[in-house]
Structures are given as structure tokens and as C-alpha cells.
Length: 372
Image (cartoon, rainbow, N blue to C red):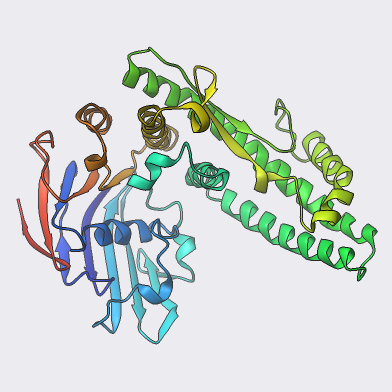
């Protein structure tokens, strides 16, 4: 998968950007706050994902602009495609989104079309961050291979919200306990399916990431990843409609009094985690900073390689200021794993070990002032 052209104007501080990137490595160089990360974020927006920076809709359009426009073309393993987005000030929610000339109702409907892997300095703390961050990482990765998985996640969150609201009513004496039954059954079926998909992905992630970590450490340490469910001790079956759904339902029923006491659902896929261990020890608790960073690098590189192998098409890599956070050895490792992939790298300064064949775009005040 290769992006063949990018145009952006009015997206944050981007001003009249119009570039033809290289199919290999592209470096966006410039001082801080000049628009380098905005370029990466604009590309990421066209994947249909939420901003990796948490940008809200009202912050999309630049201060002195009346609208924001992004358009790009890309080639996948089958054909060339185009995506465009236009947002007007004063009517932010009404976005004009087109995929190959056909209007799309929601940005999320683009998900699965343009596949990218974004790697930021915040991802280097993935191993020691909250379970929520690791769950989000696994869910995004799994969704990139199976876009319909997003529907199951949204459905689960909706059911969970309804169940939690009902639990509060029961706690207040406004509803009988037996009214939870219908929500429990729906939550169990959807949660069992999500658990299976997560477990399958985590097994694949462990396979790829452990090999990559071996390369980083020359086999001196062993990385192990596995899905840590709050419902199941282990998932040996994929029967999410039968056996696994029943186990899930029994767990919900067994904890109902405790749920009512605390006022929310204590167990379920919303409380799960990804266990990350090196030589059997939790990286979160016992890993050095170097081990934590190496494990995170192996996981992000594994994400890209899994997409490449499962989809038979390499994703576009977006490295947002991450190389400057790493030592020379880890930079060399990352750059050594991207041949055959198109890469966009942001940096304040051109490091001495940057690839010599990279196409360099100088970014200043939201404009591309030069490229070579």
C-alpha cells in the first residue's frame, strides 16, 4: 500500500500542502510546532480512526481558515483509490467525505480502506501504561484485520452502558434485580465474541513480537504476550455462541450482588488486559526502561508485519518523532524492519543514521517549503 499524493489546506496549520511522496521513506523535517505532526495526523484521519492526539472536531480547522480540506490517493494490492474530506467552520459535524468519488456518511466508514500503523513517543510507554491503553491497542490491531470487529465493540459498549444504568436503578430501589437478565445475555454473547477475536490476535502478536524481540536482544531475553481475560482462565475454544457465552453469562450472574454494591459491572472485556512479560516477569512492574521500550518497539513492528502478511499488502508506516527518542541501536532496528513499506518520519533534525535514499520535505509554518 502506497500513498501517491497528499493535499491538505486548513487542517490545523497546514497551508496549501500538495506533495507526491516517495514509495519508500519520506522525512518531514522542521522545528517544533511547524506542522510535521499535523501532516501525520491528516494522513491518519483518512484511515477512519480517531486522532492519535485526541483532536476534537472543533479543533480541526485552523484559526484563520474557514474550512479544512484533505485529499489523498493511494495504491493498494488491487487498484488506485482516492479519499477526500472537507469540513466547514460553523458546521463541523457535517463533513463531506468521499471514497473513490462516492459520498460516505461517516469518517468511520473509511476504516479498513487505507491501512496505516502510527508510532508515537507515547507508544513507547505502552507496556507500562494503563490496561485501557493496551486494550485499545489490541482492539485497533484486530479491527485493522477484521473491520466488522468495530461493530461488536460499539455494541458491547452500548449494552454495558445500559446494564450499568440499570444497576444504578436497582441500587436505588427503582428496578428489580431480575431485569438484568436480558442485558446479561446480550453482554455475554457479544463479550464472548470479542474475547475470541482478542485472544486470536494476541496469539499472533506474541508469535511475531517474540521473534522481533529476539532480534533486538540477540536472543538473550524472551518476550511473552498473552491475552489476560477477566472472565476466562484460558480460551481453548472459539465457540463464542455456545460454551464461551455460557461461561461469560455465569460470571455475570455470580457477580451480580457485587456489581449492585459497587454500582457498575465489575467483570467483562472492558476490564481485560494484555500481559507483557520478559523472562516470565511483568515488564510493567519489573522491566527496565530499555526493556519497556524494546518490547513496545517489537509490538508495533509486529502490528505492521501482521497486516502485511494477513492482508498481503504492507501498511503505510507513520513514525511521529519516535526515532529521536531512541538510541542508535533501536533506531537501526526499526529502520531495518521497514523495507517494502512506505514510511513517513517526522523529525526536528536529520539524524546521521537516517536513510540516505529518503525523500525530505522541509516543513515551516504549515507549508512545505522544499523537498528533495
